[in-house]
Image (cartoon, rainbow over all chains, first blue to last red; front, side, top):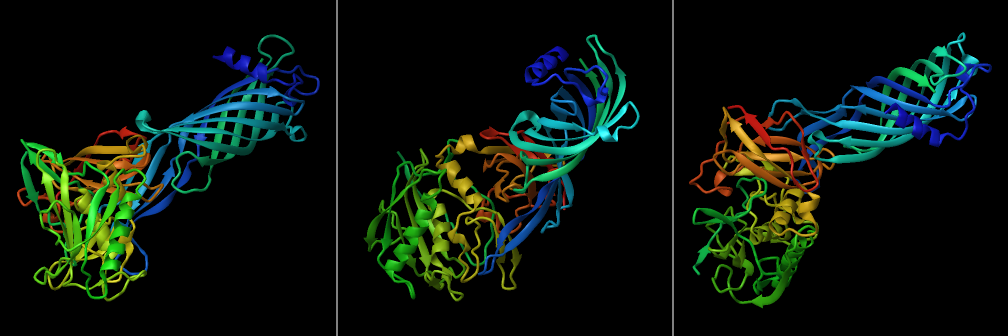
Length: 227
Length: 330
């Protein structure tokens, strides 16, 4: 699997100039692979009343009940491949997978049905491409390097039992830090470290009960290896 | 071939009850046969007699709009043709489908009714007549007349019956002091109780009506584009007959409903837009049960309205996961 990712990343590589993480005098990795996990912060899907038509000459709704839905917070798994484009800039592609629940609160029933939260679990995949800018001026010591990133990609959501697939887009912006554990001038593995991200993601399309983008926070962390 | 006249009193009364879509059926050799037109276009005649405030030409125009409303459903294939004015009366078994005014002062809560002549072997509808009761005031005013019932709205309901649709229970009512029930709200043209005087909402079909007619006369990829909810309603492990099951789509706001139609509590709701739905079950208590089912089949209305704890996902074509909704006694 790692070999495949490396191969794909090498095709994408437009530059083999090094990462700022390694420092000006340090050797550089040509491609970096990261495996990690995180938390998808959850997103509001929208509220809507189940309305009938009132017995009045002017149109006005009669609420049967209210449904308020959100995509719940959930752990996620993230795979990422990065290729440097310059000393401070890199492009990276990632896959994030999670299994959030759609949680719909059903309240205010006109006939007194007990309020409940109706749920469904989905599989959610986000394939994204981002640009990462290393903030070399903010480096802390030799090992800790902050960065900012932003990008977008494709959102694929599969309903439970794979009865239906929904498609959308994901846009992400945020930043984080990289903590270098190891770097060496040659060899197959040239660097290794930890990375933590904090992001704001905006989802468009996919499962949505209102026709507007939904934003949520996400955090992730993982181990990267440079080759 | 045995011919039989089956009078289905499809009443759109001032004070009567309601439900979500049903199809008319008859029983042959123990098997249920759905009643429907098998030839299209369906030819209809207008009685050449008006009513106070509604001359025959306006009556015909309002009926033509009502037929056109059903014909315009993109996922259904039925078509109609106006065959002319006639002196024949509705409910004469003459092979001609006639719509017209009649005076029935004894039926002072009945706005209109639809009757059929059917082939009891095939379920084919051969003739269907509609009368509108002149014991009650009528209007064809474009915005409605607060002193009279909107003819076009009631006609859309009765033409739904003419197509083979039964009553829908998608509505809420309250008891009236003089008996009967007053409608508070409705989510289907096929709700058995009419809106009040001057209200014209039922000129426009609702998702429940569209699902019902599209399942009966499917066209335009209806089966491929929409999903089907199937399942069972139980109480203490036993099936519940006559429970009203609604499917609400939080993305579109559409509500389509159905009933449990046997003692096992099985239900089926077609015409659902792909995506998650809230499933809600309620007892049939907003109308007389006879508006939906025969007296031989007493419905179970002794349970609490209940939401299913899981969202139902309608696929694009075919049935989704089978549901079981457990309800508790009142």
